[in-house]
Length: 277
Image (cartoon, rainbow, N blue to C red; front, side):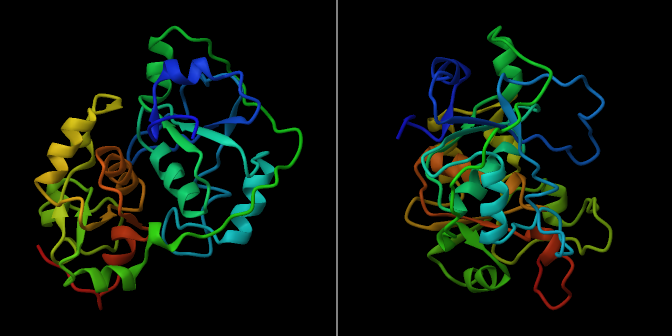
């Protein structure tokens, strides 16, 4: 392992820019109701664009951000020049938002050397490190082969089984209002409420501005909801902010982690699935 933690500092990345097998991915997507597309493009040098909402989402699904299959992931990752021995650092221009989702996707597809830049581009800029205004275009295809790891992935059946399983904990990353059903869902056609027995931890509560809180703080936050002996399954609106909590869990030493890929976009749309308010 190149780095000692799944998150790395801007200084650590800067110190390792010389690595031949380093790949830097800009994983930025828009937030709900907020866009970054109109801002001038500012990037870490040699960044490759990771098309999370385009090529790396399954558009045959009615739900946003659905994980693509192994074959498609292999093809698209190879097109980015990713090899089996690549060391990937993913970041986003918000700070910490969509980059943990990409970290989880690569973990689910069997790549271990995947890291998140803590604080993303804002912290890089605050360190006065160089930036560029254009993406790096891979010259040759990589040899990465996806190998799906089910221990990272949750679907509806996994969630149904977890509801009454005391060895598992479901943690919802949405706001308290959405969790309790007192605030409207941003996507039309979804019921309000939450998955039965789940606990609420708003994703912003594990962040300090644009970075993660300390390992000790994250451990303290999670210990109020669960413990390291449980398998912790994270859900949210569409699988993005659930991944922020999944990464926080790993940082804190809670290693048994799954992300519910469909999240509330799937659960809230199915009248046959149980909900609480």
